Image (cartoon, rainbow, N blue to C red; front, side):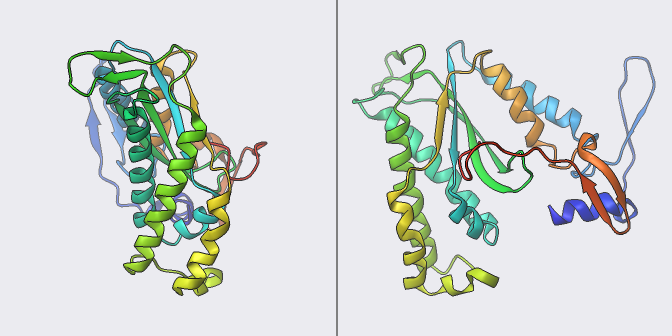
Length: 261
């Protein structure tokens, strides 16, 4: 976010490469191709959405969200590459494992997953959105097993397994010296202190959302495409920008901390 604000405030620092887009009326449009530019990323977001729509099956889909608690989000800010990768791994393994369990769906499902690192309040809020098939291929590959129309798998079970997978992976990453800590979290470099920091999280309910989208998977893809190739501070949020800083609007979250997807 700091880098983005700096580039918004100091556009002359951005190396600009101009290139032309094809236009039906023969006119040329100019793009800077900078990934922090909300205008230039619009076409790429649209292309991404169209590619994902082409991959959709003729089956119902569910929208599933896995959210990290604020306590882990705080250390993820200092270890983005490692913890974001663990978040993807823990969430996908959880979804695949529970769906494959014969007590639930008993099938191999399909998933499209996208990482979001901020929420509507523009604060660091790591969570993964998934579009999940409402059913899957049987273990022997001979047939399609459909879920019930408005129910995929129990979110309570997803939450418990996600919590265990994520915390276990964090402990392993710490033991392998893959995590770094600074400032108020510097003491967590000690293994005992880190385990004590995580201890309360074993007993809390982790937020997992799962619901069949009202308007179908295309609605969710359109929502996700606004984030895959665009940044938090869009033009509509900007109030002012000059050499002294950037002023932008946020949307206050009404949901409890750590729960809003």
